[in-house]
Image (tube, rainbow, N blue to C red; front, side):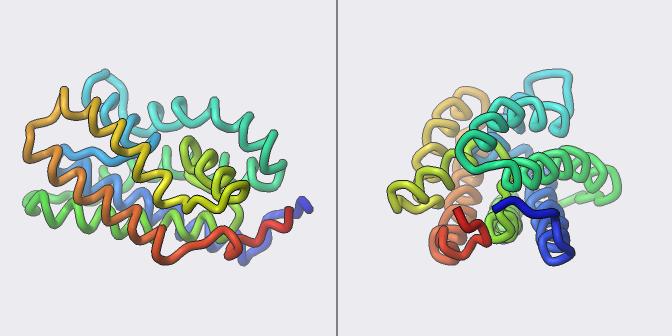
Length: 198
């Protein structure tokens, strides 16, 4: 059943966007990547003359049709808001948070933790961060295969491509961050925790 975004949902979406965006800022500070569409957007932002925000939004848009088709208008609107929010908040935070020195391993762990918590908040309020998260939620709903485990498998493909661009240690630290993110989701979230009634 579709509904207007309540204050309860709004605060969850804002928190999810903020924490997920902060995770991306940690990654960008040390030149790391993550999995899913955010990882693809980070990789492309390193290679192309475009920032993370526009690239992330563009990569996520094709999945909105899938979201609308499989999860309905309520989920799609909230996800579109989350994607737009992350696309805007990441460059805003990056412009105001100056990280002059942080060990890459610590940055990776903090990024995974922040993004994992942020994504859980989005999932629990019937939204996602776009892209693969939409597909992962659909698959868990239909098959019971955990969202975190599915994303971890897909991340392996992203990191295979990243290995052509990043230094070996950058790739290793990035992998640590992705594992932290997906384990947090796998251990702390199940699809029945969403407020979606379909």
